[in-house]
Length: 100
Image (cartoon, rainbow, N blue to C red):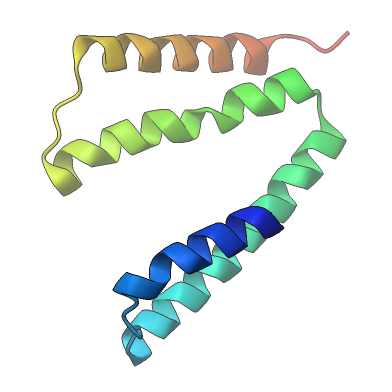
C-alpha cells in the first residue's frame, strides 16, 4: 500500500487539480462508504465460508456491467454476458448450498 500510494501520488503531480468543496465532499463520502464496505466484507468472512462470501463479492462485477449500459451507454459483449452468467450461477450455487 505504501509503495502504491507513493507511486500514484508522484504520478498525480503533473496533472493535479485541487478539488472544490463539492469534490472534497464526494471524496470524503467515497472514502467513508468504502471503509464501511471493507469492514462489512471482513465481518462477512468471519461469519461465513470464504468461498461463499467471495462468490457473492464477485457480484459487484455483474452490477457494474448492469449499470454500465444505462449510465455510460456501454453494451456488454457476449463474453461479458457469459462471464456474468458464470458469476451469477456460482453465487447462486454457493449461496443455496448447505453448510457442512
